[in-house]
Image (cartoon, rainbow, N blue to C red; front, side, top):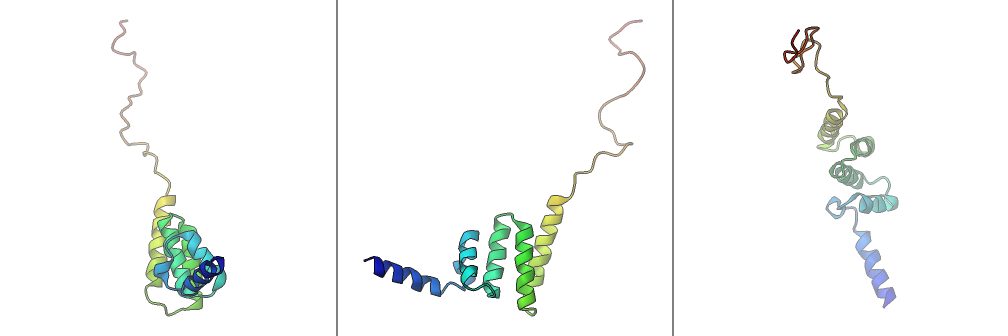
Length: 116
């Protein structure tokens, strides 16, 4: 029984390079351990990393896939989109400028509730 289950498991993993069979990051890493230069798996891993909000890792895997397969369609767009999301997330919030209205009044005058 164990042999049949193990055989079935190994046979199902043999057809792994399809990116549709790379549903999450861990599954993609497991597949890439067996085929480290498979560009489809690298792109699938990048897609899974984007879904997991791990944008720097996704960009690194997309670029590796681009180096292995420079003419791959749509890869430049994936890299650009991930870089834009990363830049938007890393952009610091701007403090209000000195002339902006902040709702606070600063004055040397005594508060209106006090009498002189």
